Length: 64
Image (cartoon, rainbow, N blue to C red; front, side):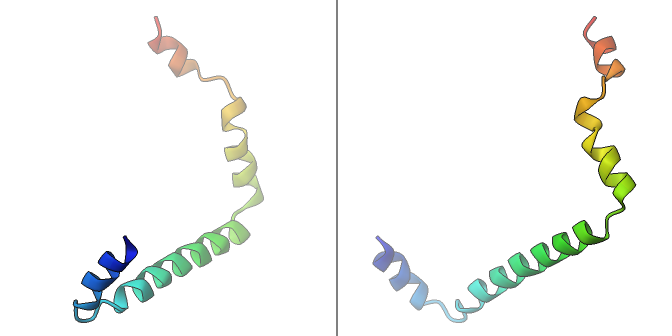
């Protein structure tokens, strides 16, 4: 199966750039995510982590 796909892709000019671009996008995304996690404020992290534990009164009003 892979030899059929590989054979078709070899005929396309400049197809080697796509794996490089996808690797760069993947790498940049996770570097930015790692940077955001390191620089996030502790108060924000505590506030967001408690959201699932809070009661939602607006949801109760909708379920009349």
